[in-house]
Length: 560
Image (cartoon, rainbow, N blue to C red):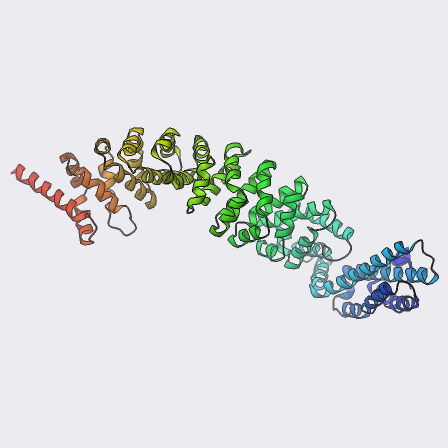
């Protein structure tokens, strides 16, 4: 029998079977001593009820086929033996009433009951989680050197198992090792990690030690970024503790928790859950006061949430519009500004109240200033496109909208150019505005945009030009562009994928009063296209075809 928790050198050399025998022998002694105690009856009754469960747990553990080959089993039996020895010692003190104070003894007995609880839980976990078999198998592989990868995986499985069993200090030590393993070879960790390990990590996020919480969230951040554990993380309840860390963690804790939420919020279901768990306010606070990395991650998370239509009202109630406009103006990183523009684009996609809110808070001016950069972003142009319909032409011109749209058509991505063309379609509701757009120099760029490989870009460019050409001044500008007629004729392609046909017909009809333009249309094959479009009953096709055919006949007769 080993007393004193098995701390002697003799105890260190005991086999797993010997430790089992030791623990089994200590149980009746501990029970006998505990039943002798007269003081603190409530606490000792609880301790006795837990002691009575120990034999069955030891039996379950010892009956496992991998029992004797598993280091975790031996360690668990050592822990159980130490706790049983503690029970005997405290029972002796209580029987002899040799303790320093009643309150201190009450506290010690509560801690003792907690140790017994932990021992019982850990024994159960070793059986239920399948850790015994996994670790024993991998230990065999390690000792036989069968497969280096199997050996590495085995060591990692044992390390992950240690996150689930034992006292907090032991888990802290295992966590330190896991952080190092993640740095050295994240791929191997991801290959062996299981749902129960994720659950253990999530539990450690609520540890009382700030250092443990910080290290745990570092691991969880890496797991979230890997893209392979999101569902497990969310189902194991990671969102509430992450949000609490964003709210009140250390600077490192806040940063890692925010980055983890950024990755998890890519799922619309998880984005809704973040709102439901009260995550919006802490994220907006980070946008105001966080460091550059945290601010960018928070802005991206809020942008992801704003992509969920039913979450937008909750965002609005937390002042999201002001927050995003402030980021556009003062964001530390360019990425933060881009996320802010995307968020505003999402918020203004359909809700007129949110559109008015953005306008009243000065969002239009901030978006226009943001577009002055060398590479204007599609999201900012998209937000402008959503807003311009609620602003008077005079205000838009005074704010400098047209030079910015011209800049986008010259320098933006195809997506940004498309959004700019759509904005032009929306603002051209009067002859004055159409003239201003024409004089700003947008028409040649829109004509060139008709050559785009993207059908949606060709369509919106043709729509914008068709709208602008209803003003004779702009029609003359289009006639002067050598590319206009060939580009428009190409858009008569009857393919069902070509959705720009109707706008091309409108443009060409307006140009058909010019003999030169009609000749060009005919030379580029417009008649063949129009015959097919007439058969398809496309509006305006038959009328334009007749005009071109009359012109062709007149040319033939004049030659004769």
